Image: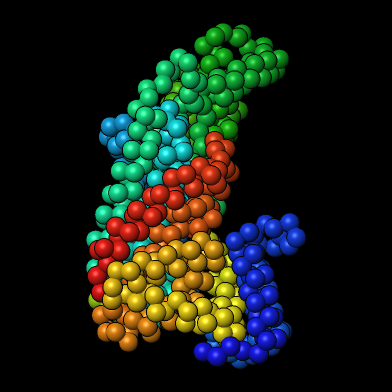
Length: 556
């Protein structure tokens, strides 16, 4: 491609430079507007500077990629509601045999979940689980957070829906879901294994230290708290019930009030048994409106001449049952006529809700499995994901707004701005000029060419981020490989997917998944900070080794 006019080259470079700075450093003090606004600003500058026309800017937005991304996010939201990620969290601590076993589990669960639900989603969900489990077992969180982030990146390389750059590659290359999976799966399996081995070797002494519980204060984390975390903004709902202290204080206050009122009004002689009966009756009145009607009917009997003391004896027996019901968190009133039917009806409703919940969760899992099978069969990926998302919306049979509000629309807008900005930068001719210089040395039909290509992708992925790197190099790398053979073209796309994804493990800024783990850990109740240099210390050697080993197993 011929270089554009000098003015367009300069202005286009300025617009792309602003986009790059805000994408890599979203909180830059000069303009702290964030990644999404930075992408829109870069796109707008490309149009205002005349680098790209408004019509071409709209045409640059890849709707199939946006549709696939939207569909997978909606499916992930419903899977979260169906407790899929809660079960993944349970796998991390189920019959664990120490710190090293936990490390291997985190690597495996993180890799598999990232391949199916995207690496960003897995990191958002599992970070809190990992922190809680590490605190529960009195373990240092640093190596486990590294295991989560790095394994998520490696595992996400396996499928087109594992990360955003794979979505771009799958749509632009036309490679089917099954071919993509089979081409990278061997490299991913060995890569995750090697990643776990490196982590165990580097932190073996740290994971082998048995800390003395008397010397190190440990915060006790209940098993329910470990498993109750959800990544969505919605909080877990819990049944409210009186605890023993609240119940005792309520009993004492009601006893004092009821006995004083009764002694003042009727001259009734107070005894401990009468105090209990009166307080129970007031609890009964507060817990159910049906008891008030019973008391009113009893009062009418008093007006007709019934003996008040015998009436108290008659009420004392059912009131004990009410007291036990309140203590157990049950608000039914057994002394109301038809109370047996009320208990039976309540149990039936509760059982019906459980079966309905189980049926709905089963449908969510079946729809998700159906989506994966459809993708493996080679159906259109974006429409398959959107169809699965809408099927879950219909099966939920309620207003879908709360679930749709959890979709990251800012990410979709970021992609729109990035498509326009990168397309405008491509029209300046700078990426083509750079590739023309590198192409003779980056042919994938020999080992040295693959090594050069991998280094270029690795450097650009950490310099310009992995998705812009794929957008800048994808078509050029594929065209160069297609001149050799169709098999080499497919292999070039897969190499681009593998290297650009694993490159995210090199530094903390190399992948959004790394930043998510770091930010989630910092904002959690534990307040742990994963520093840039502590990540780089492990990320640099492991990324180079895992990338090299994986390149030997990529099949075209």
